[in-house]
Length: 56
Length: 108
Image (cartoon, each protein chain N blue to C red):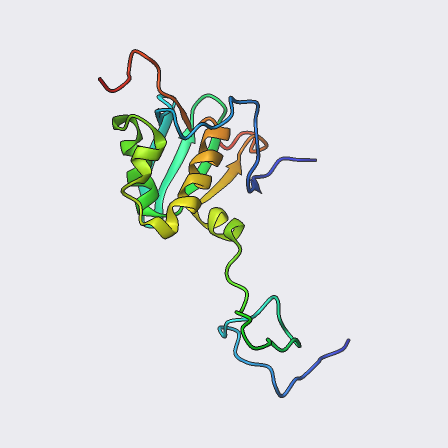
């Protein structure tokens, strides 16, 4: 069993960056904004209940 | 064995391509149940469930049938969010939750 303790780890609620870690942004470069696909996923989520035999 | 609920984002079925220039309406086979996050849409035909995760989207879907076309309906949506709402409507159309409006039910 291995437990990793990081002094620089922030709280779980802190926003995380999926991209750009370890990369400096040059002058004139803007940070990557939210992927439009993520916004779509937040608006509509489809759930299949086909396999829920006997639930209803 | 697959006997549990599964979540799919963007699953597609064989439906007509989504055309924002056409009028659409909520499929009569779909029931919308208001929820704190927006609404839950249940399709009695294909037994699909979709979570509409924004009250504004629910309002848009409910009122879709009163607009000549999807683009007209989207005019009420803030410009910066129109693309996201358009994609959301496209995925609802792919799931048969919204359907092209028939001539009979078209706005005069």
